[in-house]
Image 1 (cartoon, helix red, strand yellow):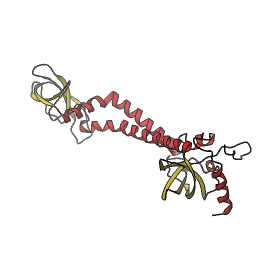
Image 2 (tube, rainbow, N blue to C red):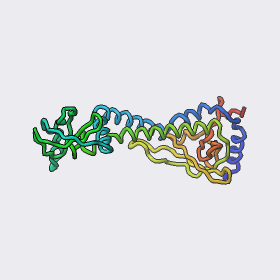
Image 3 (tube, rainbow, N blue to C red):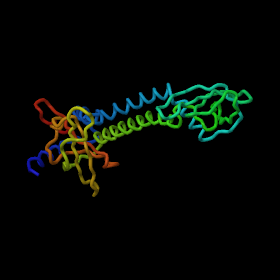
Image 4 (cartoon, rainbow, N blue to C red):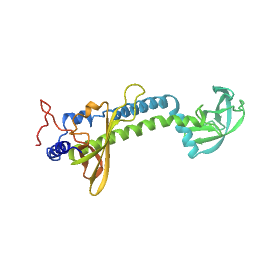
Length: 267
């Protein structure tokens, strides 16, 4: 490691303001503002959550939830088929899905349930599975998509989990930037990161490691281009801030800049 790089890193380490500190404008833009792949993950999760939620709300969600509740617990009552219709045709050679409208013998329940290749006839006596206001013919499903209809619920769930992870990670990094303990870290990788778009160049990824409390910790940061890492004192040793309560939560220290490109002295 060149001695000049180490001296610059040490000088930057000495200039880090005491906690709690206000992250620099550059830090908020590059590290804390959902930059690079983190921004892509944020938008992807939001789209999956909203699009999946709309699909479920208008098409599958109530019926899929009803099937799930009936699978968990239901009681049987006698019923009668009122009419039969083709609910949805599958690709050949699979049979079409038939949906039957029915009512319970006491007239308290009415509904519609479906089954691929179902053998229903008007006036046919059937056994209904009932729970609350939900009911279906035993062995059928409320949604024409069958058991696969429940998979529609996974899309908003995946989007919500992804969104929660991205926001949580950003929040933890923000905490490290404000109250974290500064320390020198060795750069273990600087180069192309994992592509997040089909077109365009891959992001630039920085990885580092440091020793705190006798244990080794690692961190990483991905930005859209290598030029956005010009704030680093070197490509060999950098300054990072780690959460005193959990050193595994850490982020790169980005100093304040003054006109002319110099680093603002510590407060």
